Amino acid sequence: MDLFSPTPMRIAFNSFSQRGTGKPHNEDAMLLNGQVHQGRVREQGEVDSSQPRYFAVADGVSSGKLPRTASRRLLELLQIRLATAPDTASLPALLHQVQQDYVALSANAELYGMASTLVGVRLIGNAVTIFNVGDSRAYLFTNGVNGGQVRLLSRDHSLLNDMLIAGEITPEQAKNAASILKGLTCQFIVDAEFDEFNVNIVTHELQPGERLLLCSDGLNEVLSDAGIAALFVGNSDVDLLSACKASRRAGGADDFSVIVLVSAT
Image 1 (cartoon, rainbow, N blue to C red):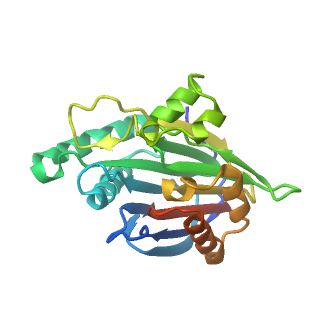
Image 2: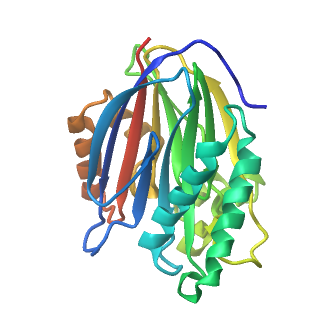
């Protein structure tokens, strides 16, 4: 069950998205409080969580058709559903409806086979509901004596992660696993025959000073969770740009998209 709290909070958000190295277009897209953004994004603002607020990152799957269109259309369909959804609507049910809307795009043969991952958050009061499909991620950062702690809130829907959870492979073995094992086992896809669709849901009561990070795998493909935590010590443009540069220095070449949300009161 989703958490709900009537206690409103001020939430500051900062976002950054940039196309990958050598790519002609950014295949990620962002939903920032009701508006879909794509391309080179540097947006920030503040919202009141007395009513539902939604933020999300979608990553078009490069092995599918039209990945740039795939991520944008997914967020557009999601926003349409959210616009008429009750405040405490079941997110798994809503996202299954979005998947059905996505499949309906196959009426246009050019869109058949498009696919995208999704990670997002619903904020109501101090109640946070994280939802994800695929391998885009959500992290929670808490303040601490040694620079704070990081907690992964999302779950990767990949063959490698499924094997880790099942105990079929160790974390050490996973570090050198073949790239084929990183393939997605669940995603939004414009294909009526695709029946493996699962939504991961995590709830949390946000505390003042805590930060949420939503990202595409362009951040975490080459950086460890601890390395990511060390980069996001604040919520400024400098932090987000520095994280992008750190990913590039570590060998990351994919599109890079992050949204940071910080509780104020």
